[in-house]
Image 1 (spheres, rainbow, N blue to C red):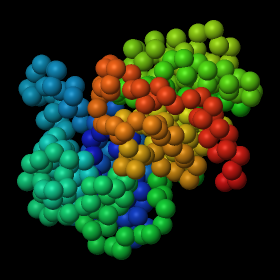
Image 2: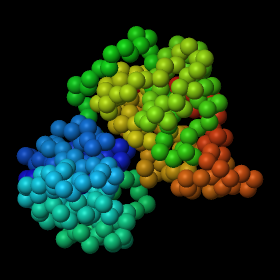
Image 3: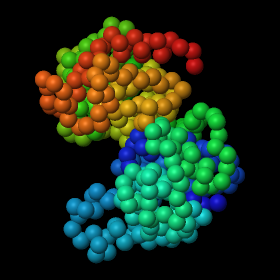
Image 4: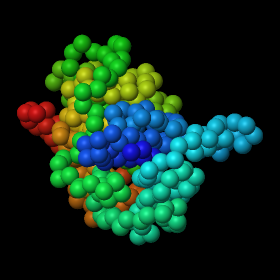
Length: 344
């Protein structure tokens, strides 16, 4: 059975779909998946053993590239997309971009119904529609959708991301002593803990014998991260790495402390001890999930979760979420130390 998955972005969303593939792979012997994904995250689908081909799109870059229609990458992408007729095409992102890709693929199209899609009218692209409860963890939504599309009983087991037992690349130059990975950046400015809090946490980790490695994505994030490490002997800003190298680094770590961003989902899915901080967003819907994952959720603010990119409360308006700023270092460190002390 050949199935095409359309899920273009982002990193955390891709990771959240992996348990659905594991369910299907275990229920249907011989099933194979192809996956359409944005080039920035193309490593992630290939981590799962049931994925045969990764079809890369670059829709964000194509919008800015003159002449792309005149014999460039877009025609080649369309040719690859339509080269196979699939037994099922599943839109697991359900916005207008993914719905367009789904419509262009060959094979019966499946996706959530009008009340369940992320962006209306994405459901018009599908031949078969499924009602899915919105107010639940995204991982559960995709497991339910795949089970209904492909016709197997929904497993009652914990999510299996299919990442265990893989040989991950080990980046050069990792510390010989125990180290933590801090994922301090996020796509929203108001999902950022304060610089003061991060520096206090790095110092606390140093007193316990940990080196600290700091990740970044863009040049702006690298500069922001470098300021956190300045003057702290146990902190190091990582060089640019591919996602698989970052996964290998996480596997060798003593744990990760993260903002609500894609690498938190990767760390949790790898069963690395992972603590993720939440304020404007709701971990009940999009929480990093894994056997050794814990959430620290802001308290004392009636507006949580607001899902706004700018904080606005009485007496304050600006990019820094005041609910996150109120989370203390002691609380985060206590959750982390309890987690790593818990037997696997």
